Picture: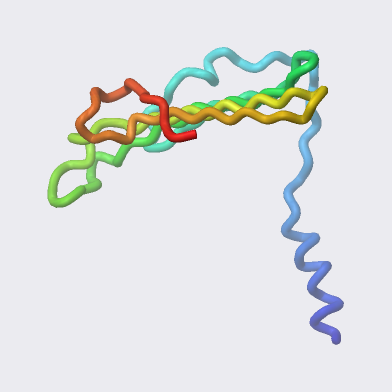
Length: 116
């Protein structure tokens, strides 16, 4: 029973610290630039009556030391994907689109429409 009492304290100690948001402080445009990282993503959420939206762009590539079937991972280039979710706030209807360049033989950086 004593262990169950300590569990909420332990879980509470693991909670992240909430940060305040200053609506007057605009995002730094430099934050949207690609960085030399193996995995990056950019996203935004918002609404414009009568729609709510969320979009995300992903870029991933193997680190230089990573090998795929004995070949350098950089040979395969970066993988790109994009997601778009759109909700009609009047009807609740949702639309989700996804594109990715998963085909190893496709030109790198050109995403093709994936399955719906």
